[in-house]
Image (tube, rainbow, N blue to C red; front, side):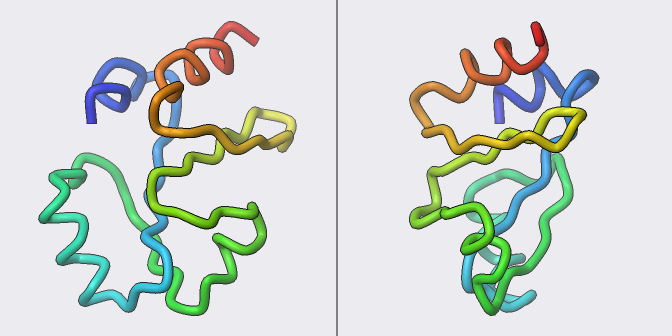
Length: 86
């Protein structure tokens, strides 16, 4: 992921493939080529539900004080830059 390559020293990236057991998650991660950061299985959908995620190309940004917001695929780079800028 280009954004992770660019900002990986400043931001921690964690993938949460939704409603996937560990085997399915591993397959998804390999197919998508997103192996450069850790992934957490969410086979019950609990994590997705907590953050109101309804589709794969949704990102949740969490700042140092725990404030979070959802963002979409098309604006990820700009949103990460804004998060870093504070």
